[in-house]
Amino acid sequence: LLLESGGGYVQPGGSLSLSCTASGRSIDSYAMGWFRVAPGKEREFVAGISWNGIPFHANSVEGRFTISRDDAKNTVYLKMTSLESEDTAVYYCAADDRLSAVLSGRAGSWGQGTQVTVSS
Picture 1 (spheres, rainbow, N blue to C red):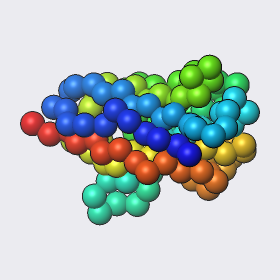
Picture 2 (picture 1 turned 30 degrees about the horizontal axis):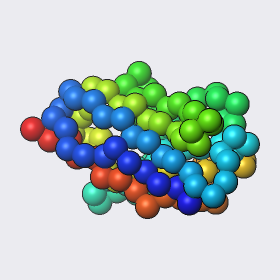
Picture 3 (picture 1 turned 135 degrees about the vertical axis):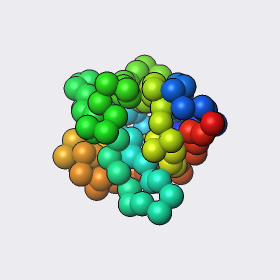
Picture 4 (picture 1 turned 90 degrees about the vertical axis):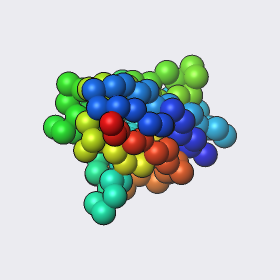
């Protein structure tokens, strides 16, 4: 089970940090990722991280968002800065033992999502 938290309402230029905590199993051998679904749009890859901590970020968030993981806490994070209205979406956490599955959106496990709204 993956549980996201940290979503909310923020003004443009602001920051938010999302967390995804896994229960029932350790994430230390899993690749993890973040995706988002904006109103009227398809699911979009945001960031992924390999089991050994190698990060990947979508071009649209490069330099603004940072993915990280703390296996001791069974948690993956997404730190979001310089938020824009275009970042408004439901953000989902994903996990799979294959990095390729996470990066391509074919992960085996998904969270329920957390809403991020960027608006003035």
